[in-house]
Amino acid sequence: MPQKRKRQAGTSSKKTRTAAKNTKRFKPKISHRDILRKIVRRAPHWTQLTSVQQERRRDGFELLRLRRQGLTWKDAEQQSGVSRRIAEPFFPRAFFRDERRQLQVRQYDPYTRHLNIATNKPGEFEVVHARGNRQASLVGTWNNAVKAAGGGDFSLIDAFPRNVSIGGIRLPTSHKAVSRIAAAAAEGKNPFEDIYALAGTR
Image (cartoon, rainbow, N blue to C red):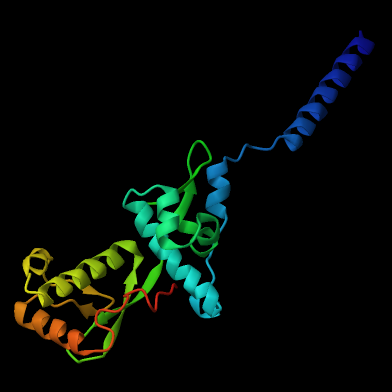
């Protein structure tokens, strides 16, 4: 009888050691989403880029814009002049892969654009720091409305929301202010130059 109890004690001790060993070996599963959350992906600061890289980056902004408008990858790449493979490293948080592992563009990105807008002084432009593509889109819409107003069409500026400020700079919407800006831009050497000419990121 004592021997039997001894064997039982030995078996119990062995089970305990095995359970402890298995506990040490056990590793909770970490989902792919959890891994991605822990990875901090940062695009290089625009001031660290070469002139060629900055040009590619500006083209990348255009690629994102066109893709969000519904263009196919092929058409967006042809019109922007840059491929998704080149653009992705500049804007890692603007892209994602769907359930089929296909590269897609997010509807929103946090990258700051440094955009040129016309002023009421001929040949002078003001830099607007637009945070994310939504603010950049607003600046582009306003810029196009001012262009149209210069040709006598104020319908776009009338439809533009009032009291909009981007990066601390207010976008005028009164006919008088817009007309002065359009007239000054027309007198400059590069009327309504590309607003993405100084595009950068933070």
